[in-house]
Image (cartoon, rainbow, N blue to C red):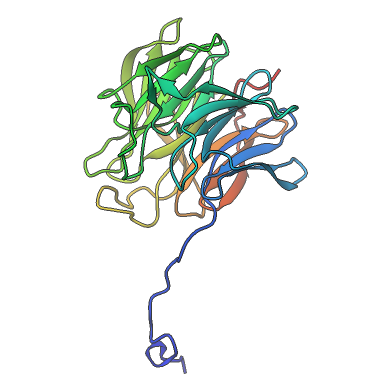
Length: 311
């Protein structure tokens, strides 16, 4: 006979999470196959070597979020302002060999950045990053735009996409010819956009046109994404548990593989509630690493991933 939970010590009380100690984001793989990824909740950057050794690269990481390696093998990091205090609201570049940290951007036209979220790099060495703010407390904001920015090799910072072109820019990826910048517009509010946009870029890296690629609304939209060598988008999206009135559980969690024309090819299921970001690694670039909740996952894919890998 099964026990009656109502008569036991708990009296049938619901079990809920008291807190969480890790929230993983921003995976990036170096030339040696080591995965660097952010733990926003723990305020640190972790590493996982090709041999499976887990380590801590940096503590007090400024609420690091998205990461990418540039052609010189330096780690570029978006340091945000969410999931706890001590967020630095800047984009930095770290020399892995020396540990030296260089601030690439922390202000625009005099105002502090909102909360740099994700970053990518093109073949010219130009960096593109998103700067939304998801926390409910917006009292410390100094900018009135949540936008997308370009950092040129000489250090000059330009806002290339603003509002209303995007509402809350999140993950982004650029094509191998530097001609198209994909941006995930992920607004959790009621009626907010959950669109993947394709922005045409001119030779200078300026956005000159926009077209919709894939609409996740009314479910949870995309977070981070990557491209494979065939041009397909790998978008981390979906949710199991509804977080508020603005999102539904229509989109199950996973990595959504979408063609440039907007056709959903496949959903790679990930057994976590919230899927955040992904990157390609392995010697053949066919290992897909996925950050989700408190776990780093990996799976094999048939098409190699694209990235401006270190020389």
